Amino acid sequence: MLYGFDGKKPQSGNDTYISPQAILIGDVRIGENCYIGHGAILRGDYGSIEIGSGTAIEEGVIIHAPPNKTCKIGERVIIGHGAIIHAAIIGNHAVIGMGAVLSIYSEVGMNTVVAEGSVVKMRQVIQGGVVAGGNPAKVIRKIAPKDEEYWGMAKQLYIDLAKKYLAIGMQQV
Picture (cartoon, rainbow, N blue to C red):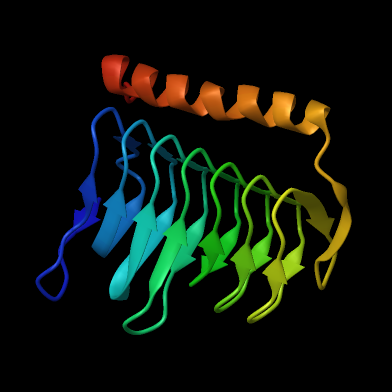
């Protein structure tokens, strides 16, 4: 469901799928070829949310920004099921694992993987090109070619899934 709020309404680019069970409120801007999953909540009510093209926001994700700030999520990013993103900057090609938490003003660099269940604390910065995990999140190692290959395939899977949902839709049974 898309909701206008305070004179602003969600916007999305071509070939972007937004589940009817997702809730998008206010100033939410989504690029092309994105997937916004079932049960996701994107609150652009007193802050803004920007999502780059080719990004997948999986089921149950919550995204928010503090007053008059912008949560910026790059291109070809995957945010895993049940993650919580609050006013973070997430670089292009990053992966945020299932159930991870990115707290207020945190930043995750390009080509970075934040492992499942990890907590990136308030104002914490995770550099680009690494795998980070834990609570609080710490750098574990540099990204390997096998990581880039796997996550590249997963990102394309969601771009293709979005197109399929748009082409055939869901049928209630």
